Amino acid sequence: MLNIVQRFMKRLVRQFFKKKKKVKIGLYGPPNGGKTTLANRICEDWLGEEMGSVSAIEHETREIKIKEEISVKSGKKELKFNLVDTPGIATKIDYEDFVKKGMSEKKAKQRAKEATKGVIDAIKWLDEMDVVIVVLDGTKDPYSQVNITIVGNLAARDIPVLIVCNKMDLKKAKKKKIEAAFPQYDVVPISAKTGKNIDKFYEALFVIAG
Image (cartoon, rainbow, N blue to C red; front, side, top):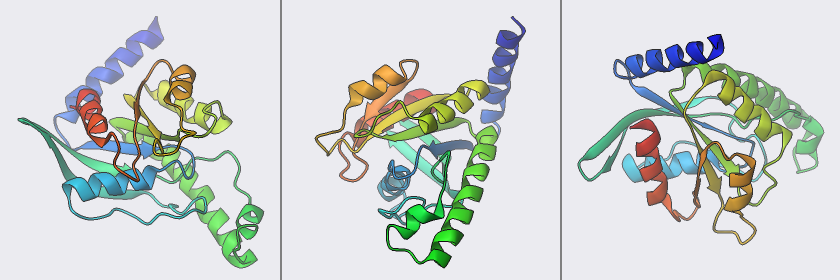
């Protein structure tokens, strides 16, 4: 009973302070799920500029990145927020995996070190978020240790969550698998790369963060 009361009070406090400051929306998920691609899509749509670089090699984003003063409009509605792109969450980071993809050992070790710090920072930043968008690769098995860890951390903090089933431009992407894995959350299927269904994403964003 106490836990329920505590969660209710936390929600009331968050709603109160949300009116006093800029809403922070965080992009979370495993490496290469498409977080930065989605961040770039949002920023290009509403600011006319990109947020960060992307790469086929995991952990391209290794530091917290913030883009402020984003204003999304839909009819007479307007949603203003600061967008936070976070490093990909991983339960294991091995420099040898980077070496196998062509990096020198020195660069691979540095990338692994930075990526590990990035994961720690991303988890710490959860306490700063008003809303979290979990970006998942729709072609991959959602029942991974990483995804369960991310969702578990969010559930413990009682943060509003929207799940994005990304890469819907690929035939192997399956929204239903992600819905089955996380039935407690709304799932929006999109392709951040091509812009497919991006309007549906913005509509869902208004519902959860507006």
